[in-house]
Structure formats: C-alpha cells, structure tokens
Length: 456
View 1: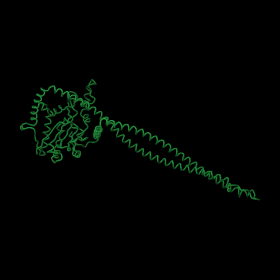
View 2 (view 1 turned 90 degrees about the vertical axis):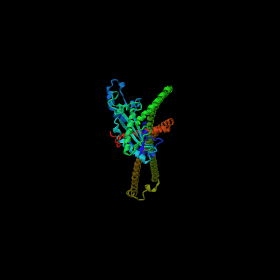
View 3 (view 1 turned 180 degrees about the horizontal axis):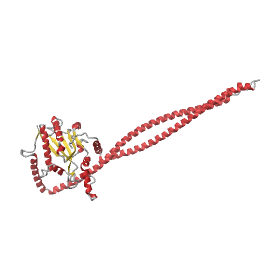
View 4 (view 1 turned 90 degrees about the horizontal axis):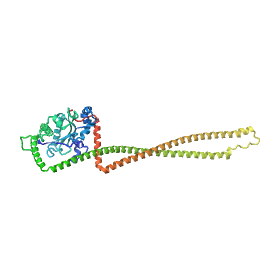
C-alpha cells in the first residue's frame, strides 16, 4: 500500500481543534472518535517556560522602562515572533484514506504511533495542544507548540524563537527554499514514513519525475524556478507590488485593530454572560420566594379568619351574658321572697335568704371564672394578631426588595439585548460559548491530569 504524506503550517485555531465550535466540514456525530493528546492553557505554558527567565532579565535592568511586565503580552503584540505555531500532518486523502473506512482507522493508528515520540524528538518545541480529527473527510493531526531557546545572549536567556529552536535541533537555514522550517518539516515527514512502514504502508511521492532527487531537493529546484519568475514579474510591476504591500500592511493593522476590539467585546460578553447566568439563578430564587410568600399569606389570612371567628364568638358570649344579667333583675327565682306569716327571722334566714345567697355566690363565682378565661383568651389572641401583623410587615418589605431586584435584573437583561442587536445574536452567542470553553479549560487545568503523557 502506498499513500502520500501532507504537511503544512496551520492557523492555530485552538477552538476549532478542541471542537469548541464546529466548521461546516465537521461531522459532529463522529467527534467522539477524535483523540486529544493534550490541551493546556497557553498562558500557563508561558508562565512555566519563561517566568524565571523574565525575573532574571528584569533584575538586570537599571531602567524601569526596559523591564517587561508580561512576556505573554509582549510576544502577542510582537511582529517578529508568534505566540505559538501549528503543524498539520495527514496521510493519504479522502479517496484512499477516508475517515469512515478501515484505511482511515489505519491512518489513525499510524498518527497516534507517530505522536508518541514527537515531544522527545523535538525538545525545543513545547507541545501544549495536540488533537487527531476523525470527524472530517481524512484523518489528520494538529500539533500546536511554543518554540523556545535557552542560554540566549539577548533578551531573556530563555525566550521564544522558532528559527532558534529549530537551529538548536540541527536544522540550519540555507537557501530560500531550504529554510529551517522546510528542513524540519521534511524530517518529520521522514519520521512519519518510518512509522507507516511498520504498518506496511509506503510513502508515495507526488509532483516530480526526477526519481534521484529527494522531495526536499525537488522542492528547492521548483522554488528556484518560481523565484526567477517572480523576480521577472517584480521588475515589470514594482508599482503594483508596492501598492499590494501597502494594502497588506493596512490590512494587517486593521486586522490587529479588529482583533483587539474583538477581545474587548469578548470580555464584555463574557461578563454579561456571567451576569446573565447569575440573573437566571436569582430569578429562580425569587420565584421560589414568591410562591413561599403567597403560601404564607394564604396561611395568615386563614389564621386571621379563624381569629375573627373566635372574637365573634367572644362578642356573642358577652352579649349573651349581658342579656342573662338582666334576667337576674326580673326573674322571680332570683328575688328574695316576702317572709311568711308567723315565720321567725331565723327560719326566714335559713330557709329563704341563705339558699338564695348561696345560689348568687355560685353564680358570681362562675361568672368570675368565665370572665378570667375570656380575658386570657383576649390577651393570647391580641399577642397572636400582633405577631402576625409583624410577620406580614416583614413579608411586605421582602416583597418590595424582590421587586427592586427584579427591576435591576431586567435592566441587565436589557443590556444584553442591546449588545445582541448591535453585534448580532449569533456573534454574541459564539463569543459567549468561546468564553465558556476557555473557562472550562482553565478549570480542567486545576484538576489532576490523566491525559496523554507527552514524555516530559
């Protein structure tokens, strides 16, 4: 079996590599077959690689304006170096190594095997993100790395440098076609071809009929032809070239401006997204409190109705007692009878007066007990009513606070709506999802690692 090898410099779209979002050529249902070798925050990598060197560099500076506050930001804004580089490697094409075929599975095994020794083979290329994709037409691998050198004589003694990193690994620049990168890329293709041979797959070379030339030599030859043709074209079209270069510079400046504006927007959207999530949580809490308040109000109303019924009963009892009191003035049984003829005073006292007095004593005693009981009930009901009134007052205050909170939450939601109308809902949502992905990656870094061991 013969298959081609494709290698190129990638754009370094980490969110694409991690599938934080999916492009049109991605089949999300096959993303479960992808392989993540590692995925570390690049800012964490910069701290790990350069913090000590940055401290040594700043300690030597006598002028404060020559000190570097943040090496990551310095490189991000640099026009000479990039924060990181990416290489993409692929075996075959969609026709002979399709991801859905058994040949595609073979390509996956070969690329995994190839990745095992990549970091050991490239000690000056710190790999922080590496992903093998099986959800596109052809299996391929994205390797993102930070190139660095040690013992530098200028700047930080450990600093970012692609040219220097490859040179320390033995790739010295030559002609325009034989740059450090081209030499290194050819070397990695050779390493990949060795792995392919262990799986009985031969490297199929395309684009040349000169069998005695290596791929790199042939590319040098082709590049020399291209350079000669370009030099002739440049001599005839200098003005046009200058215009193109000027437009390119302006486009780069505009792109940088847009990128910075996008970073500001992303930060604002991230903050609004966090506030939106908080608003949702607060709204749910307020809804639960509202239901609880309504339930408590219903209970209080029921208790008040019950108290009113008891008070009504007490009033009726009072009115009944008042009516009964009048009967004592009119009812004959409560009147002291006239003494009978020839009845002695002692007999009148024992038989008429004392029994009536005894009955009156019992009546007064019962009425007194009844009054005491009613008085106690009135006191208890009064305390209970006061307590309920206080509780109603507290609930009313709480409801007013919740209304104020809801108004503030609605203002925040309105702010998010303005942002979506200005920048577009899809763009804002994409930035929010990107921000969440970054936060998830940062949280994942704080957990114990069980990912692929890169051999460090």
